[in-house]
Image (cartoon, rainbow, N blue to C red; front, side):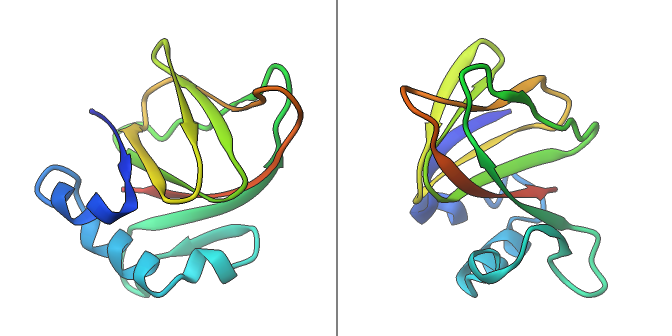
Length: 125
């Protein structure tokens, strides 16, 4: 599965992406914007988690983590990030999201022209 869309459309994917209600709840409360870098649970007793990270893009980027048997939903909170996934390139900016298989090989933080600082949240579903 590979989905690239705008945040306003998150709810429309509830039937195809598991635990989308957790993602929507966290984003509705703007938690990742205020969270420090680290890993968090969407609910106290739930298994769905999210990771907030901050990076500086570079010419070659860096390999992203894999999360076998999960779906990853990535949202850029600040700045812009270029992502290479399955021979496709996506430009993530605030207001957009990318959902993909956690088994996929991904390269994150590839710069367009000059290095850019960016902050992201990745939901591990």
